[in-house]
Image (cartoon, rainbow, N blue to C red; front, side, top):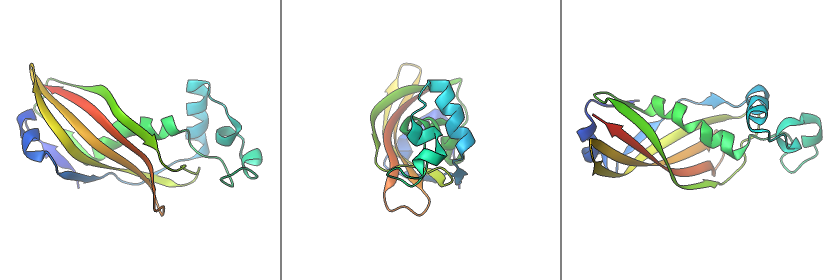
Length: 151
């Protein structure tokens, strides 16, 4: 289910509410390799499936920052904001990589509105995000992110 915000002032009523979950998305080796190329982080645990078979996770894992970088795209499965002139990613208050995301697994995002503050011309919305790996008891990543929406 996707939450639709028709005007940015509606965010105030959503404070404290869980907005739902994204669809599950496959994390494949190609995506991990492309991220490694983009960031120049080619550590074997991410890009060498043969060597990683004997590593601590039994195979390659996604970069923590790859997991986090999927949040802006996955959030669109959870919330659609209409009635705005501009929306910007304002940053992160806190990020933790709780458990590894094994290549071949599926990931989804859950979001809760932690805080809403008025700013000049709009609102600042703080979201508590949880990125989960299918079948895992622990989240892959928890992050508190801040967006600004301007009308």
